[in-house]
Image 1 (cartoon, rainbow, N blue to C red):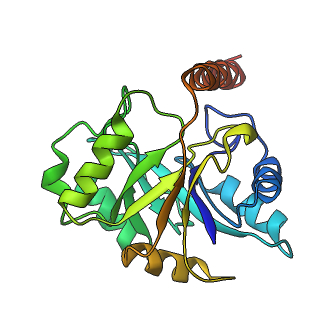
Image 2 (spheres, rainbow, N blue to C red):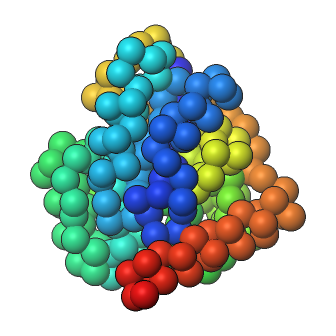
Length: 223
């Protein structure tokens, strides 16, 4: 299964994409497992799950949480976990709900994990080692870190719009796996990292679009 394990929908403050559009983009690109991890919200994932019923794709519900130390992905999470908690507490809540705690873009420029990640190695379940949209050498550093500490590795486009879906993904052995089975394969380190990050110009355009979406969200909330 080709699994893009990190994307967003319009339920994130920096995207305007409907969940249905993300599902269709994944199907068109041969991605048959998509983890929707909106910022502080799970409604986008639930909408996508409903839309994907009967289609050849697994939607894993998730959430991206802003802990005090940095962003954390909760994979297979259906409940909102508050932002601004200590990272160790955030991870504990993810695991308490039966999810997987992954550190996304840990060394990305402007979005890195702010504390010494080595202090959290025994707490987390894995590291995102290939993110399609970050700047700098963050992916290379993340891969080295995961190998040094023998941590499971994941890959995610971090798509906020359909064009980035599937740029990178994790190839998991097996067909028609459940979310729990996919997570177990990740824990075992059974996945193969595939794809390549977007080009610099594409990333710049993508981040401009995200910022425009942020402005639209602020205008709606503060007319």
